[in-house]
Structures are given as C-alpha cells and as structure tokens.
Length: 294
Image 1 (cartoon, helix red, strand yellow):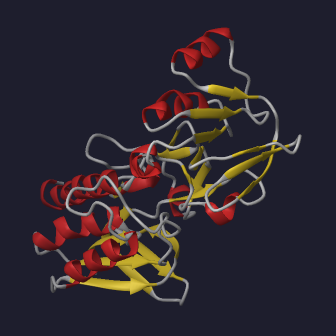
Image 2: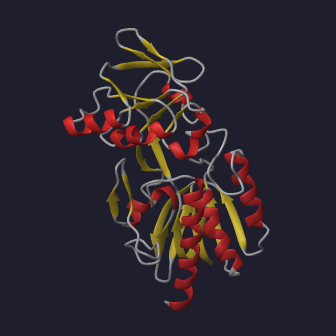
Image 3: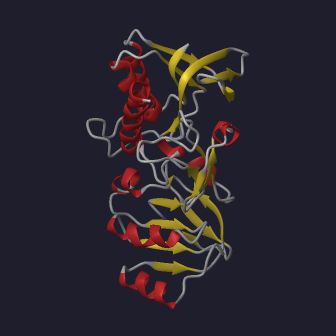
C-alpha cells in the first residue's frame, strides 16, 4: 500500500511528489508521458530554468525525485480509480492495480485548437496561449490574436506590451463599442475578415480575401478538457473557467472527494511551468498534512 498515488508525472505531479518524498512517505507516480507543453522547444519564466527545454526540465526533475528511496514510478496510463474502505485503488492500462491512502490528480488538460489550416503544426513554436511564456521572444515584432472565444479580448488588451497587435475576430465574437474603444486606446488593430490558413516560417495569416498578414507570432485561446477521465469518474466537482472546466479544490488543494487532491493545469484556470511547480508543492504538502492530522 502506497501512502500517496500521484496520477500525472509532469511538473505539478513531480513537485507534489518531492514534498512527500522529503517527508519519507511512500509515493507512487503513474504517468502516461504526455506533457501539455511537449510541442514547445523552450520554457520561459521559471526561475533558474529560463530558456531551457521543457523536456529536459521534466526529465531532470524526475531523476531528482527518483533519488528518494520511498518513490516509485510507473510509466503507464491510469484508467480507473475507485474508493475503498481505507483509500483508493488505481488500475493502469497494463492491468496492474495499486492501492493508496491518498490520491493526487495531476493529469493536466488537453488543448482543443481552432480549426485553422497550419495552426496545429505551429502550436508551441509560433502559435501560443501564454504571452508570459513566449511573448518576449517575439522581439517586439507584429503579433496576432486569433479569437476563439470572447476571452480573446483579454489577450488583445495584454499583448501590445510585447509588440504591435492585430485582433483577428474570425467570427468568434463581436466587440461592443466600449471594447472597441479600449482596443483603440491600446493601439490594437481589429481585423473582421475570416482567417483561412497560417503559413510561412512563423505564423503569417491568410485571410479569406487572399490578403496575407505577416506576423512574428500568433496567440489563441484553446478550449481545454481533462486529459484523464478519472476526476469525473471519482465524482470530483468542477468549476467553469474561461476556456474550460477545471477541478474544484479548497484552500488545501483537496477536491470535493475526501482524500483526493488536485494540482496543476487540471486544477488551475491558468497555467505555465512555474505555476504548476508551485501548485504541486502546495498540494504535496497538503496531502502530507492530511496523513498526519486526519
């Protein structure tokens, strides 16, 4: 019997595991190996790791975690999790079953991208969702915001700090007069023509008229869904975020299901590596406290 099973071994899950390992608790990490940021070549904004490969950061973090003798790692997909009398049983895709007193859900989310030709191939390289992660590297060049939801207004208001910005409405929403006035004050150009494709070395936008707008980079707002069905199967409550549901947790990162904690992108309505690591540390400590005081 493990004391804590962590489902998801990316930044948040590893960070949670580190706190528990340092408390000499028996931890199992189950990870299918599909990091959300696996499409990006560089990670930014994380102290001490700025500009490094996200894959390298994750690999080194895993190696550091596995130095602790009470930690085990199973590279497999967790397919079911059920409550038992004194904890939980998790079954993986290879048929193995593991028991734990606590669960930490750190499985992250899946991004559902706008259906624009050429966008998927550029995701994480010249098409992004987080300006704090990638805006600086565009060197003040022209930036596009491809609207996929009304929250594109927030993107468009932020991005002029990183470069001259064009908001491509693409039929996703229609700014009202007050919003248009806000955009003008920020110097944002508003483009009403539909976007049909992205092309070029970066993310040049081809409009329905055939006109091409050259860009250094493009930002959009992917819809998100849980990468794992386990939070819903366990009965965890959810909250609605601007781009999709996320797991509802209390101040100690515990879900509505006693003994089940959640962290990272699955439990935070915004995310990058630094936020995931911090959230994981909080969650690992909270799960440890629950083992002592409950």
